[in-house]
Amino acid sequence: MVMRGAVESGFPLLGVAILGCFCCMRGGQTQDDSGSEGIPGTMPPHLIFILADDQGYGDVGYHGSDIHTPVLDQLAGEGVKLENYYVQPICSPSRSQLMTGRYQIHTGLQHSIIRARQPLCLPPDAPTLAERLQEAGYSTHMVGKWHLGFCRPGCLPTGRGFQSFLGSLTGSGDHFSYQSCDQAEACGFDLHDGERPAWEMSGNYSTTLYIERVKKILRAHDPRKPLFLYLALQAVHTPLQAPNHFLRRYSALDNRPRRHYAAMVSCVDEGVGVLVQELRTRGLYQNSVLVYSSDNGGQPLSGGCNWPLRGGKGTYWEGGVRAVGFVHSPLLKRKGKVSKALIHVSDWYPTLLSLAGAPEKDRGQLDGHNVWGAISQGLPCPRTEILFNIDPVSRRPSEADSRTLALNGFGIWDTAVRAAIRAGDWKLLTGNVGDGDWVPPQTLPGGPQQWQGMEKRRDQRGKSVWLFNITADPYERSDLADARPEVVKILLARLAEYNQTAVPPRNPPDDHMADPQLHGGVWTPWLGEPGSEEPGGSGEGGKGKSSKMRHCKVCKLKALFKKVGSRMQRSSLFF
Image (cartoon, rainbow, N blue to C red; front, top):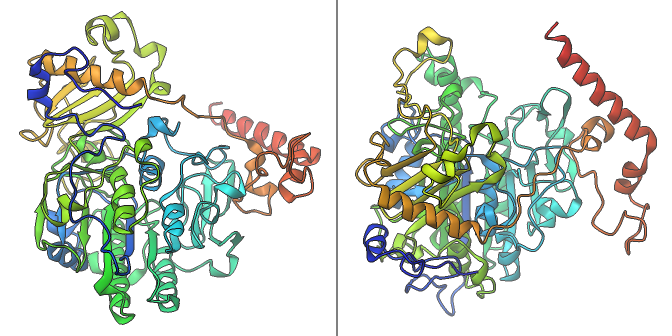
């Protein structure tokens, strides 16, 4: 369904003046992106997408960081820095929108991350970026963290368009041992080479291991064929671990989490330098486009810094969704520039497909926009608004009363629902949008007495709606919800319009049959493909490993006993 603009919704022309053009609704890429298509008769460019994990907005040298990132600084300085660039506040949502070009409300992934034991993954009817690029003749390789579900074999990266994969399937794990835990009671090994556990690689530091695999891919690649390489680094996500020679660089830092975090960032920086040098050595650099992005804001409690932005990872404040991002490429028509174009992580899907010369199959289903013309040439950006999310699961009955709809929401929107939208200069937030503190650099996370220098929020108690002019107030210090009710009403109506197109949230409970201890100590798919395991299905019902696990009564009893035992263990902590 195509969204309607403010005037079509019955709002006065004031809405158009405030919010700008609403032409870029879902499926409405109407502006000309001349110069953004693949060049006829030439080989499409090699596409390199590097996604850092939990890198804060303030954790790169060119944003004034105390962390040394000479490689990232040089690549960004020679390319285009994206200084109005947004992602999602947590891992899976950013990755799902990168891979599908669709907002969370259109994939059913509105609520939180995909947990390790959750029987959930990307919807099969949403083709991934890798699948589309493979159709266009690309070699497709992924290295690093997936975190988009793996309950069935078809959910794995190799089932969603990648010809090779080395990395982890869950959201986090030890950077050396690759042990990953979902809460305390379910732990297992999580490093996979293709579809098998890569036990023999345990002990290697994740960033170093992944860069070595990247070098191997580049050395084996036929330069006559276009390449898509997706490097989704596990760093700088917790646990905070780094090789000793990187830690020694920051021995003067008294803040231990910050010291380890900084060492991890420096290791990432050095690894990116190795990747770019390998592109040059293999003759791939001149026809390449490299995109660098963080997946969400940094976590101040774990060494990250988003200063001077407000909030951090897990929140819809700017510190949670404004990301480090840049494009580096010899193919850019403008280099050494700073772009203030409004860009969202979902835009990479249509942008990279356009560069690849892939046919436009699913434009009407996309929320992303082709922004290459804005990045490379400084053309007007087709995007004028971003729906960050609408999460109906977040609405708790205890948080809502008649005021959230009738008073705060003007009868338009229930402001107890966690939601956020950016339109033109304006940003509206509703519901529980997360901790809104400003955390200055070097704040120590060791105890309450060490947080005294932190700026505490003063506008969240008892509130359920906020409005900011982000262009004039990028640090979200001046809430204008009371002063500009006409803008609030327009943006609440936009949320309501978007919500009309939302699919129901898919948030199934954890399946204890996913426990790695039932699968040789490894996180791995535990369900068969649809139809292959159910009675009367058309597949090989019961012949595969997944079906055996599903119907194994002993395994089910083991899972039940472990579940009961872990709950009893947790209960004993309170007595």
